[in-house]
Length: 403
Image (tube, rainbow, N blue to C red; front, side):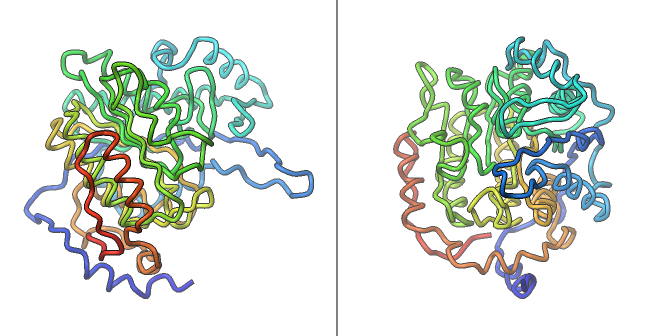
């Protein structure tokens, strides 16, 4: 693959303006070596095919962490250590006592256990999953105490698929949902409304289920239509009873790229956030919508993730004193997740492009056909805008991408 041919041209066409006099933002970073010890065991899908490494293994996250280290981005972050495991009382804000007990008992066995057929785990998984939830809690606490305005939590196992009584989709405890509940319970005078933006390519069904009846939580999921879970995340799923409109699903068609995501953010995500006026923004940060991911059919680049992160950071600055925490979810390309995650963290810090890590694959992916907004993609965004009484997006298809 010729991966760098168009990099220089792509960078020269971006029009984003940077204020070089603005100092870098104080961004917290949560990472714990024990997160990398979570070890799902392999389930064979056929007796005729050799078993392969589980999708949710440590390498994508470890490589992201290592890229931060060797690029010296790590030195620009505020390291939030030590962290403590979330207590059972805190986990029970989202999950049932019975489910927590089942996970604890299964992870106490030498052979480990499973939450569902694809959410397998080794011994001590309960301790690691509790630590991941604790990392999210630690980050939001530091933001609330004014030490930082934002943070990135590089944890595993992921969480946004986990239901109150069931783990699924590689997720055991729902880290972002626990963080949201904790914020509203622990800081009731300051945090009355929380927004959760989920750009993982798979629908955040567990998070949606947790807050489907809660008008104080705005949940926005931008995901690949009919990927995982099946029959989940349709645009018509908008919340129930008094919370109608507080769930916003943007199920983009397979093959969506920069133009579709840009349209979705401009027309849906950002206007909805400004209308809701949250006191805190949480982000389920998954990188499986990248062009290189084996579990999706989207074609995003690291610059698309940078753009989404920058927009969310700006929104947090305008709406909630900059309070935002990104919590890592999926992303399964060992080669490309590091560049996508690094781009997000660079955007959070506010680094000028000259100080950012260069993505060697960027020129190739940005030159792919279909990156501009397509008619069928626009129709999805337009349908969501109508459902949620937002201004309808302009019908700009196949136009030049803005950066």
